[in-house]
Length: 402
Image (cartoon, rainbow, N blue to C red; front, top):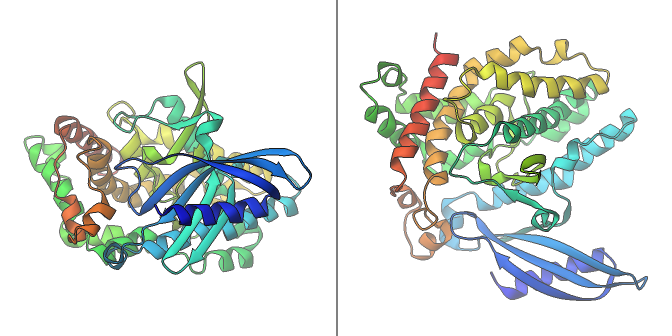
């Protein structure tokens, strides 16, 4: 990352935070396989404010890739614009809504503080608080999350989604204006990059490996069906559509633990947010982060999520039975969880690979390679990968296929 680019952004934050004088310490950057569309740098800003008070900010500086080839192959600008929109527009709207309703919840405390956004052509950036220095960290992406971790994430999603449901119910015009330009970013991403054949290839590779298992072999999709699931199905206009997170793999949850147990979670990276059924988040999360052989009945997990939704809706004097009854959520699972199933086979290949095995999108673009070449890699943890995806297929068959 260009050093001047970082220093210019830090200067803007320092000015906004009333620093009179300060020094900057750079702590490092994300490693290979952790950032696909740009660079992330960790810095501390230490100094004195105009009131002569000592002040320290620990920041994450997230900047977009500037490589022209990569930006022509991927919707880099749109992805950064979307995350900027979440912090600049959605979060303040939700905060104002809570204030109007006369109470303050902990829902928005599951997103890191955003100090600055920059939305310039070919130079997009977000400056966020560094949660690591507050004791938060991501879990091991190669192993399923524990039940305590799963419960925290499901409750966090439940509260976040309930914001959309309550706002639509109480302030329909506000909600309409807030989401009018939100679609599903994954749909646009997949259309621009022509990733449909890759999703099908990864899924079919595993399904055919287990073809002697009739329950696995029977759950198959055509290329047309895959495209429909990833692009058309997810864009359906629903009364229960919410602003989703959209990128629900392990690296996008930061946990704080006490005595070996997680006590708090932050949800990060909102570049793939959009407007869709809550089951897009739930199925993506469950089929990438959960041991689906262990948690065979999806309704047990959906109940944790739904209880969180209901709790928040009750606080706003909304009747969950009118807005999102559990039976409707189960129907959504039956209709939309195929989305998460396909994403599981795609994302787990990255999760379970070693850092040196996964592609670096910026590096391959700088070498002039076609974007789709990034997905021509094998994982040394193939046995685990095949097992995890097989368990997902069986879970899907058990909970959806009648």
